[in-house]
Length: 352
Image (tube, rainbow, N blue to C red):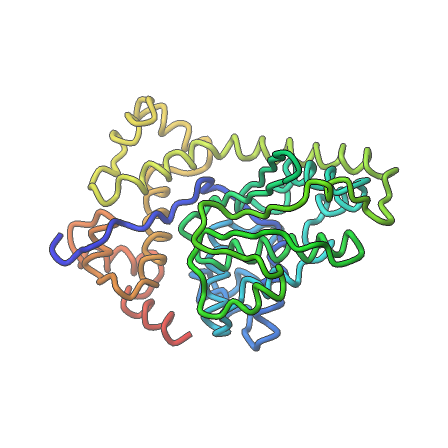
């Protein structure tokens, strides 16, 4: 299309049915509230309904959480919004998973349980740990590689603050790397993480002396560990069951997002890519409580709200990326989804 100079943004996470526990969302809301942002204003700026955050549901869509981070940063005009969110992390932020960490005998066990149970707190990414000689390297792999820096920075600030709290003292600074470019002001990064923070790296990581893994957790109630682990395993099993049931929706949504700009987001095309007949796929979607058209509309709506936040994309560009024949068709569909025009939605975001 003439005038379009970029590939469509990959707004679909690795786990598009991912969730974030309410307790993990709370620090974000606290930072926003501390700077005068109301929950309805924050919700609307993130493309949610005015009542989406009050009362806060038990879990929130992971992609909505990512949008809330960016909305909070924009509304508060805080360049280090993600770091501030991470600094508000506390034991309750991680719910049952946090209690398990408190019952671990040492930090090696803390990291092993993190690798096992972190999805009970969120589906924003996953952790890995590698030990080479005397050096341990912790990496966090985001399920939202195109998210702003606030996501990774909030995660690592939270890990740092919570680790210090578990240890009962300031732990030695790690060698930290982020994949995103360095912000103009890195003073807060240096304050939180120490002097060795690098940007534009291949991975979000923290390298530290492997001997720290043997550091005991003071006041750890190791007697509770078996009970808490059993409870967490049951919760994890249930979460995996729910995710498996929703898997067909995830697969269809991902294929739709990948095919929209190529005008291939059709029932027959998606079914063929999933190696299913159209009848089988329709039946599975029906059993999951939805239909192909509903998933198509929901995917287009979510992507439209993401694209409208990018001022360099015109409405005709967005129509093309979403697979509409022209801007008029896109505008008509957007009004049906949101009861307002794309232009009004974009202006509302700019005002907030």
